[in-house]
Length: 110
Image 1 (tube, one colour):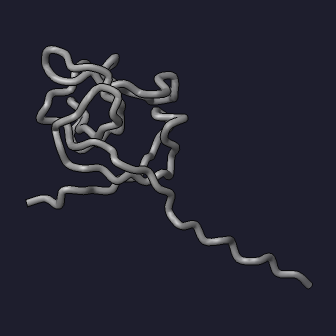
Image 2 (cartoon, rainbow, N blue to C red):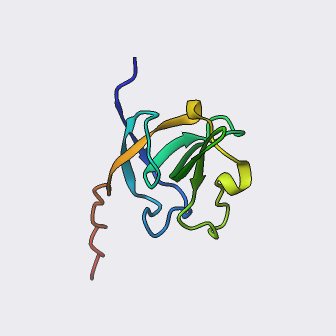
């Protein structure tokens, strides 16, 4: 049994300006998604690669997932790999938060 919520970190720029690298996301495990929602999905041809994308529309074969910033280096979405089947959908993003960053130590002065 899986905990119904999971947390993931955004690593790349494909969802800018909505999500930035270093943002953390809380998602609910579900395959019940709607167009416009930001979702987590396993890449259809690269096992172990979890994607953060926007669900654009339901199509034959699954969901058409898009990047908010398709021109970002390395951005990959359904325009490159096609629809993502329902069994590859992990969940939908509920919230974004930022990790607590500690201030750098003060500079030594003489």
